[in-house]
Image (cartoon, rainbow, N blue to C red; front, side, top):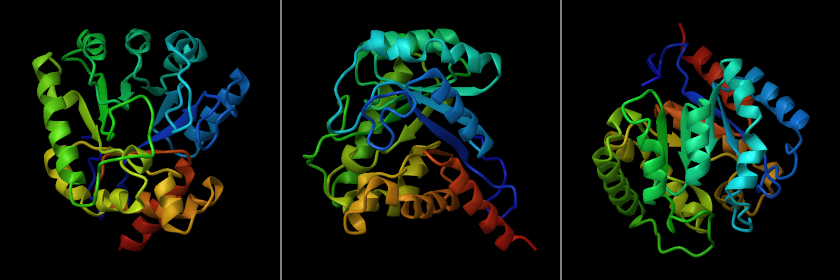
Length: 281
């Protein structure tokens, strides 16, 4: 676990994943970082504002996104990854395509962030080469286990924790059977449309996050600018969700969630700094 210091110490902090979307249709920033210069500028901003890891995604997963395919997806990041590795910048690749997974790991990516939770044999085969290594694999829950979020869901406040737990148990068993070490796994319960259009379902997961963490640690949670926050506040647009985001991220940090994925590392870093000052003697 990377959060070595205790919550009440002034140095406590989760590992922050800064989001870089090299996509045309991501819900928050689609089309903004497709050019190499724009990508580099965003990476510099993420790192200078406190990101520990750059999480690169070249395939959007929002409810209206189209599938670009592994060739385009890899083409968007293939030159960027070696540059970052050379600079010793920690990299996560957000992908569910087995070909992209294999290439990203061969190029040196430390994390694979898999929104489908490694439900397909091909993805498991792609990571099995790096079993018993220092690479880590983030398996995310979503109600449809698909390549993008959907607006219809069977999840409710009453069944969501059980559904997530059963999924994680099944995935963990299969990955361990494939030779992946328990220490290589990170669990992400999903949020927003990955759970349900009903914002209360996401809030139920957040309220009960310690229950999940007791069995499925370390965890990564990404609430950043997601729809459930806007819907809870009467339908706020994406650009108006930053306050709701940082409050939720601070809550997760205070609950010792090990990894937080966010568009704006600066906000959670500042919130944590003020919180830790308030807790110090």
